[in-house]
Amino acid sequence: MKFNKRSLYLKLSLVGIVMFLLYSCNSSKNIVYYQDVDAIAELNVPPAQEIVLMPGDKISVIVSCKDPKLTELFNLTYVSQKLGGASGNGQVSGYTIDSEGFIDVPAIGKVHVAGITRKEAEDKVKQTIIAQEQATEAVVTIEFMDLNIEILGEIARPGRYAIDKDVFTLIEALSAAGDLTIYGKRENVLVMRKENGVQKSYRVNLCSAQDVFNSPAFYLKQNDIIYIEPNDTRARQSTVNGNNVRSTSFWLSVASFLTSIVLVFIR
Image (cartoon, rainbow, N blue to C red; front, side, top):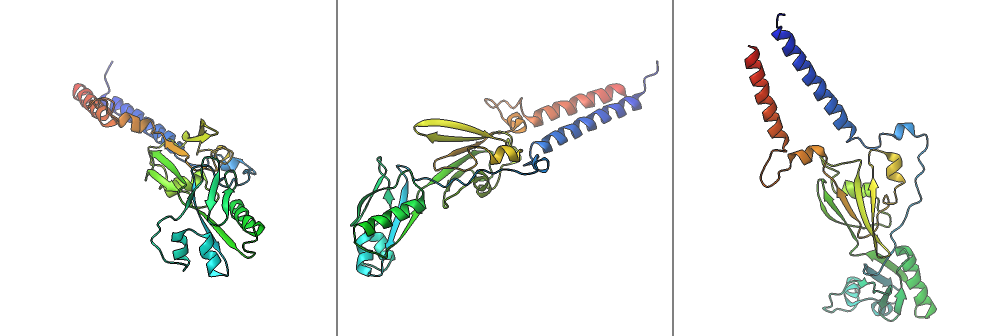
């Protein structure tokens, strides 16, 4: 039987092209967000979950009154300076919620703020001032000072990110960090959270809108840790003890070498 070199070469080329196309399709499928959104008539999103204060959180509390003396009385030294009050060299600008959930406000005393939202804490401090008959028209403003989440792994800008709003979602956090790299596993994002002394883990599939918006980790909490795992392509590029046998470039070189030998043999 006559050996058809051209036919064999064309077949090998065709197989290579098909394998490349299949790999490309599979790769693109794994990086597209919300792939099921067109198939969902209505997507039920759970109610927004505001950040709840907890022991160890640091917050600023600013009390403003018509009487400048009252304003100075209710605020820490540094805050008073910013509000135009008495001058001084104090550097304290916030309160750290103690282990029992209290903050100690000047002229007011201890106020329990753990377990409630920022707005609820503002109202509680204001009502305490009114109840003590120290002021009737006080305006209380509370802001987060040191509430953060951590993002690690295959993300454009890994690091610590501040929570500066009452509702902070997983999507907003990933967006702030510049989105996942092309090597990040979008279908298996890990969110670690400590609740009531127990470390919990949640897996989120960014390729599914249904999974994202219904995940307990969609609304983030302070101290959450987000980890983006590397996909198979990145794993193949890794080296072990300086040995790059697993790298993609190594196997491409081997394939190219073997192909050259086959072509020489055919000729």
